[in-house]
Length: 262
Ligand code: SF4
Image (cartoon, rainbow, N blue to C red; front, side, top):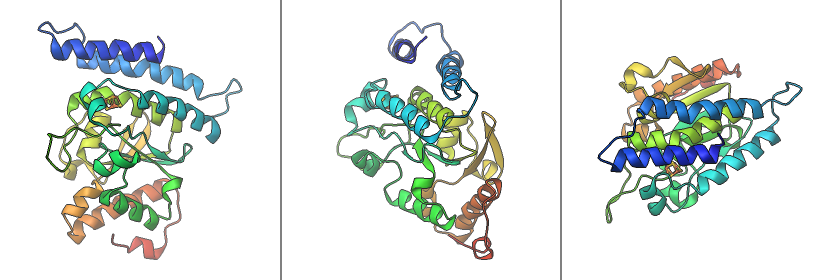
């Protein structure tokens, strides 16, 4: 089944499940499998040339551009398609070794069309700099590509719902399959839930290695959490998680970096 046709089937099933008295005979698990299996298979095929060589950065950029185009026209969550200024696809190096995953665009991101550009994003950029990375070196994306809508006249952001995350997740799966990073970092519990479907306390998940599709996955606090909680101990925890990431990527770590506090 082609991806556009698959999108239509999934969107139709989601609409029936949400609006009909009679639930369609498709469980969430079945929907998730339907969303992922053909995409992963077709991407695996597309990501390897006939000679078996892995795709180059330019090929990956082309594949990502095709997904970006579909995301830009996506209306699977009708309420978000109506309320968004624009979709927020992702930014960075299509051939990145390191990929960060957040939860959803906020107001700044919705306005600018780029993930992590608000205060939390500026802190993420500082963390990257301390790791000797520029934003252009890594890839940054969210589980949700549209800003979660807010009641008229209210401020701030709301977390995405499980249904919204499940609906949008296939796009992130495609991004990861194309980029094929060596290491993934999930920022915060919502990103973990969207990516792994796992709900647990951050103190139990962060600071140790998990895997997503055989890719090492580090879980750490969202930068927004560090803005709310300025305790040096919490900042140090995030930095220690990033030291583990640098070690995994075999990046040189100076003594100054070892002793660094965010
Ligand atoms: S959140 Fe994702 S699935 Fe929902 S409308 Fe936006 S791009 Fe489409």
